[in-house]
Length: 484
Image 1 (cartoon, rainbow, N blue to C red):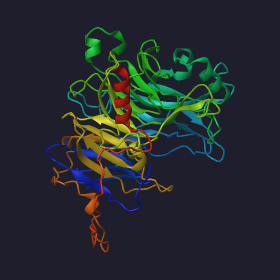
Image 2: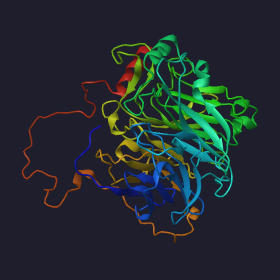
Image 3: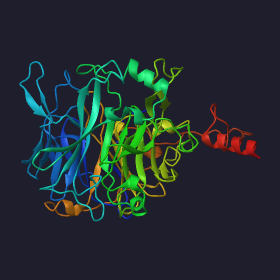
Image 4: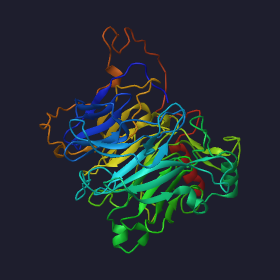
């Protein structure tokens, strides 16, 4: 996507009477866990605390990790998962999943945590009525890695995704591995052949195949579907999504079997109205008590993902589905109807010509807020913003922090209520109205408006002119004409 060279950072829009105000926590690139208020004031930085992601719990506790595994030998492995207090003291730690002896490093226990985790008491790790993550007890669900050899899947070593549950003392009390359920994933024969030849091997670590790349995991929690008798949605069941396979699934906690699934194919009669979900992140069930409860909220990245028949898009059958814009989808998991969405069209762009203006092909997330608004992390360009049900932008923040690759990426941000941080006085909330970009100028730049205007007699133009490429609206009109 295109970027200007000069643009404002920090909070750029804030409408206090329409936003759900609180603190927002995210991982500032190459800096640490950063807590900001609605006006972008940096009220607390836990410098050096890594976040994959960072989460803030009641009482000002923050979760993250203190170290990563050397990427020469591992891929996106965090050495541990820790909980620190307001002053940065480690009050809980887990690292005893695998003993690692990498060349040039002392042997140590590592969690190999990546992408997500949930503490008992909160199904999704963000605020919901009648839910609070436990701060000094409870089990923790952790998404982790394990290297395995599964010749029935591929003759390459696999970087497998596992979900483990550990008690507060660090004992592993439950474990699930996605490779154990290969036959349940719904891959067709062409996809299986592509995975067998190359399960998305990467140039990191030992070049194992990151074949699924699960990037979110949470429990369902109490919900209306289970209350209505649908056993697939038992509160203890677990939902996850995998970006490389375009799959979203729910597993039965007791048996481990997949009991509900979207993908990997979206050309079926049941799913073609949704369109292809590609490379998605942060799929979770909206918790009970929040608007849209029981629906699945997804940041549908677009970009590239999936396995299948080789063709013009993919010569090797990897990343066969592609789209150059993102969507946030809220889907009823029973009817599969889209209950709400935020796409480039709702953002006010001409689709598909300007759809790239809402586009994060990796990372990113969406959180449902108590007033019905949605907090969206458009992670690739460090943009965190809040929109109403009617798609009005009521808060926007651009991260000023960049990593060594000149990217201000934000993996995932969370909004928490003020009362979760009793150490701080309530901040002053100052409105920041959207500016007119057309008239915004830097010092020394000339204002808009021609010094001399010459009117050309007889000039004619229309509002609805044709573009070189058909817009979505034009395509819909064509389809309607054909139907008639």
